[in-house]
Structures are given as C-alpha cells and as structure tokens.
Amino acid sequence: MISRRWLSLATCSIALLASAPALAAYPEKPITLVVPYAAGGPTDTFARALTEVWGRQLGTTMIIENRAGAGTMIGTETVAKAPADGYTVLLSTVAHSVNPSLHDTLSFDPVNDFASVGLAARAPLVVVVNNDVPVKTLPEFLEYLKKNSGTVNYASAGIGSAPHLGGALLNHIGGFEATHVPYRGSAPAMADVIGGHADFMVDSAPTGLAQVQSGTVRLIATTMKERLPQTPDTPAVAEALPGYESYTWNAALVPAGTDPEVIEKLRSTLEAALHDEQLQERANTMGLLLEDKPDPAALDAFIAGEIDKWRDVVKESDMQRN
View 1 (cartoon, rainbow, N blue to C red):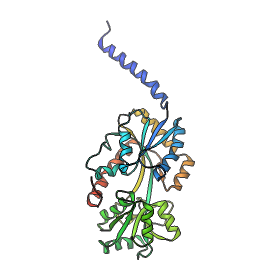
View 2: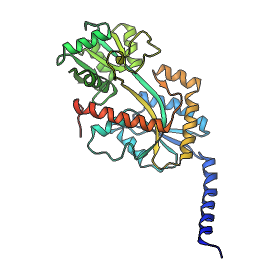
View 3: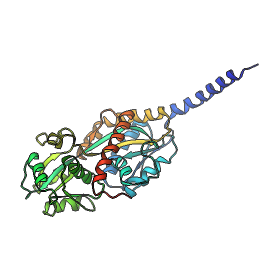
View 4: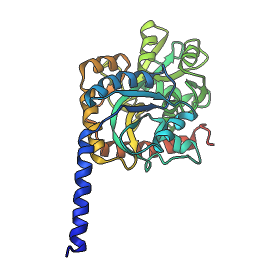
C-alpha cells in the first residue's frame, strides 16, 4: 500500500518536472515593457533603445506600452495588477519613490506589489544659474542662497518633477528658502532662467549643458555624489553640501510573485543589454549612466532608501498631497 507521504512526494516531483520545461522555455511570447510616460519623452526614448537590445538578449520581442497619467500611477498600477508570469515589466523612475509621499492613498503598494529585476540607468542633473546672478562657483552659489533666502527662486518642470526634487533637496539639506516656480515642462522653465525671471534651475544634464555651451546660462554644479565624466572640472553639490544627491533613474520591476528563475532570466539579459556598445553610445547621448551589474536586492534597498529620503523632502516643501 502506498503511504500518503510517498504519494505527496510523488505529486511534488511531478509538479517540479512539469514546471521545469516551462521555465526553461521562458520567454515563449513577446514581453510588454510598460512605460508610465507618454511616447517621445526621455524615459520612452531610453525604453525603446533598451528593448531593442534587451529583447535580442531574451530571444523575443519586447513591446512598449505607454501608460501615461496620474504622475506615473496609471502605468504602475497596470503592472502591479498584471499576472506574475514575467511577461509584463515596468520601467520605473524616481516618481515610484516619490508618489507614496505625494498621495495619502495609492491603488498599489510600491514595495510589496513588485519584485525587483534591477536598476538600469541613472540620469544626472546639473545646477545652472541665470548669467546675471553674481556667482561663479559652488561655494558662492550656496552663500548666495543663504543670504537671499526667501527672495531667490528656482524654476522646475512642474511639481514633483526631477528638477523640483533637486531644488527642494537643496533647501532641505542646506536650510535655504529658495522659492519654487513650477512650469509645464523643462523648456519654458529654462526659458525663464535664461530670461532672468528665475534665478536658477536643476535640470537634466543634456538640456542644461546644451544651454551652458551656448552661453545662455552658467554651470555651477552637478547632482550625483561624484563628478560627471562629461564635466570633470565641475564640482558635485555634495562636495560643499554633504549628503546631497539628486537624480532620476530607470529600473525594471515585475509583479510580486514572479518566479525567481524568471526574474534571474530578465536580470541576466538586462545586464548583457546594458553592456552592449551601441546601447551605451545611445545612452551617453541621452545623458544616462548605465548600471554595470543590475541586482534585485540592491534595487530593493535603493528604492526603500529613496522613499525615505523623499518623504522628508516632500513634507517640508510645497509639493501638494492628495
């Protein structure tokens, strides 16, 4: 007579054997990469360059699905509620870690509803000032903010945008009171910095450096922890204001519950894609720094740290909660 124990073991063995071919065959169909922004923007542009190479590494087609709206929450919710089968991936940004502080309630949990695949890229920012602002160095700029607290202002691409976060973090760490002036996008914000209607701006490196090269604004600092290879003579804000680091990023997430072997397949092929020379060249023109080795555990810790960091900044800034 067959015991229940042996019957249970046999059942488990059959289940494992049945699942093994499915995992070995993954992916068997196209994978959707959800981009929570409209087509044509910087995140979408990077996503299209990435999926071309990533899909080739996976041996399948990767389809971009733009699900813009509600500060990335529409696209994020789409992935949170998708089947955990490895065929729906989210390309998240810094908004993923800011939204919990901007909104009292979310239709998803930014941590528990997702499993990390890995960080793909970081997008550094630069601090630029109007040419009439009487500062040329980072120490002079910080002293100017200190002496003119309450009267100096900074432009941004909108409330909760990366330029807004960069300026708000300056206030938070430095104890300054620079007034935030939001615009509908980086272009009109930069136009008013150039025109003297705003004193400074924290902007994307490609956009800001293009204006610096044309002589319309002055470069003061960069926002990563270390200096950028493109501007080795320009200090990082952290050199004079320890603890300052502000940039946006792109990371791959999948629905919680996705099989670890599927996640590893996505991670390893993402790593291979990020080392593709053509992708690296394209990323460089976008002002992106690609990750060397994406890691799920490292991304978990990174997102948790970002959520904590921006919670305090949002609390004391003019970012509206709803």
